[in-house]
Image 1 (cartoon, rainbow, N blue to C red):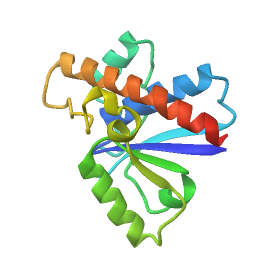
Image 2 (cartoon, rainbow, N blue to C red; image 1 turned 30 degrees about the vertical axis):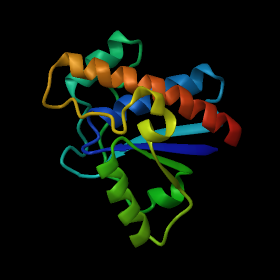
Image 3 (tube, rainbow, N blue to C red; image 1 turned 90 degrees about the vertical axis):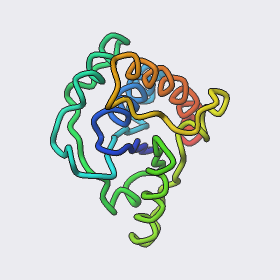
Image 4 (tube, one colour; image 1 turned 135 degrees about the horizontal axis):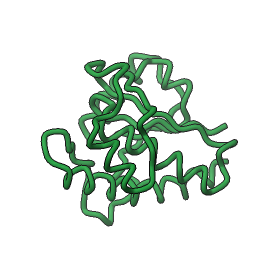
Length: 159
């Protein structure tokens, strides 16, 4: 089983959206028994909470249900338990690199979603839609969907 973890700040907007989008892509590709998907945040501010209602609504409008997901914080074991950890912005990647060094490395490969999987978009980071309106959530969803298609192509080669 190949395991993928998406990480953002609080695990209520970007990373649960990525988890939901990618999980659906994995299922539609017939890889549900070969690929596991999860998400987490670098902070525990929202641990145990549902995704932001705007993220849930935007995902549903696009055919993805993330309403059952619950926020959690990245833990050191994630670097051993996952094969690929994808940060949603560069600041998350820096925190993850530091945590990995503190956790005796681990097997996980660290990547930055937009830079490594969708450079053609011109984005390095997936912008945080939290302080904006619904348009921002749709833009984030579209960026994530574009990048996740490339993540799926990468993961297909691993399983």
